[in-house]
Structures are given as structure tokens and as C-alpha cells.
Image 1 (cartoon, rainbow, N blue to C red):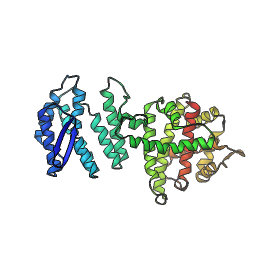
Image 2 (cartoon, one colour; image 1 turned 135 degrees about the vertical axis):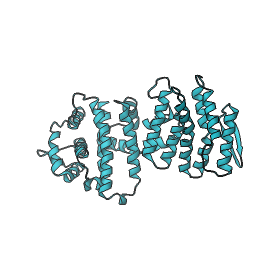
Image 3 (cartoon, rainbow, N blue to C red; image 1 turned 30 degrees about the vertical axis):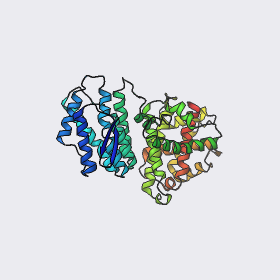
Length: 372
């Protein structure tokens, strides 16, 4: 490690191995930390970066050298994060990427390994509360890692661990975020296990689905939707009593239903409608309900009361009261049709959202439990 002393601050950074580049970083640290200047790169720094990237063209050491360049910005990232200036912590990585993009623009066919800055930029965005930006940037980091990992589409990197909910990977800077998502997810998995009397855990989801999904886009949508639902759960209940939040909640449930739809379709590929997939799941779970499609008319004409009956396990078809799993799948079916065809929400969504999302998650868990 290279030790850098700037005023009262002492940093250990990766040695870059090129004096001009290291000197450019030292000047940048002094400007930002000692002089208090806004983080920005001058022409001298950009010239040093271009010379540095030039020196590794065609070298097998290029990926490591690129990482060392980006690691040079980590003291500034840590400095602003420590001061609570997450906006500037994000700006550090946006700034770090500028010389790399400029260099790529003037060197056709040459690319810089940019997985590291996108990953840490994603962390800064997520810490600042921007889930959309954070997941976009984390996926870009994973894409960069894939490009530079000898053709591996899904390499074992921290960025991929974040977007795929890999809680087993210890070597990831933002493991705390992944663990928080898993803790949130476990609440619903435990609910499924308790309600339906099944020995089913987060490890079953990992082994049966996350590690062997129908496609990785389904996993990515699941983990992103979990993060959005967790964020929604942190808003006080009293502030979630309006039609707009109901629409947002319905949209998030619709994303989760897309995951369920795709997961069942992998096993029931000859069919494409959700009602067929729900029927298929119930049949394999030993709760056959070939009349599931008959509920569509009930949900269309009387959505709120029909949803409440399903939540209370009072929903019936031709006088036959459905069991708990059949009601859960019926809720998923009713929401799937509602989310696909309606913009406006109904009060049952925001008034009983916790029970509704638990029913949808139980349908997801049953899908993995019985079909995978």
C-alpha cells in the first residue's frame, strides 16, 4: 500500500506504480481536503490519466492497473462519506469515470475496466436513498465485470452479489445492504412456512431458484422489487392511506407477480396466461382448483370485497370455500389482471397491503417449494 499524508489525514491507497499519476492524485487530495475545493479534475490530471491508460494498452496487467487508478479515488470517497456528503461521494465516482470515457472515445476498440467505480457509485446512490439509480449503476458494474471476466456472463463479483442477493459472498463492500434485503425477505418466507406448515427457508430459495433461475433477469427483477418494497415498508403506516400509494403498491406487486409468472412458465411452457400457471401450481401442490378462471368475473365486478374474502379465507366458487393456498393464488390472479389492465387503485390495496403482499409472497414461495 502507498501511504499518503494530507494535513491531518493519513490514507493508505493502492500503489499506482507511475509517478506522474500518483503525483496527480496527491495534488487532487490536497485541493479537495486541504483547500476545500469542489472535486473536479484539471487538464493536468486528465493528461496524466491518459498517459497512464496508454502505458497499459495490450498488457495483461491492464485490468489490475485500471482498478488501481480507480482505487486512487477511494480516499476522497471515504472522506465525503464520513462527512455525510453522499452527494459528493457520488460525484467522486462520476468524476473518476470521465478520463476513462474520454480515453475510450479516442482509442477505438480499447476499453477500460470500469466495474469498480460503478459498484462504489451504486453504493453511494443506495446510501443516499436512490434505489433506482443504485440498481442501475450496480447492474452496469456487473456488466463491466462480465465483459472483463473471460466471457463469464455472471462472474462472482461484489456487483453481481448485490443484484443477485448473494448473501454467502463475504468479500463484498456492501454486504450489509444485501443482508438487510435478506432479512426483509425472510419475514415473508417464514410467514409462508408457518401459514402452510412447510419446512422452507431462505436457503431453499437460494439453492432452488437464485442459483438456478429460469433466467437471470427474473432474479434481477426480484431483488430490485424487494428493495423497493423494503423502502415502502419504512414509510409510516399513517402516511400510506391514499390512492397514489395504492397505485405504487399495486405496481410493485405486479413486478413480483411477473417474477412468479416467469418462474411457473419455465415449468409450464406450453401455456402463457397467469390463470393457467396458477392452476398448474395448485395442481402440483396438491390443492387443485381447475375453476380458478371463474374468479375473474368476481374480481372484475367486485374487486375490493372479493380481495377481502380471499384474505379472510372466505372466498368461494360455486359455494365451495377455498383453502389458504388457493386463496393466496386467487389473490395473485386477481392482482395480476388488475395490474395489467387498470391504472386506478382501490382502497383495499393500501388499507390491507401487508396481508396482500404476504399472500403474493406465499404464492412465490409455493412456486419455488413445489416446482423447483
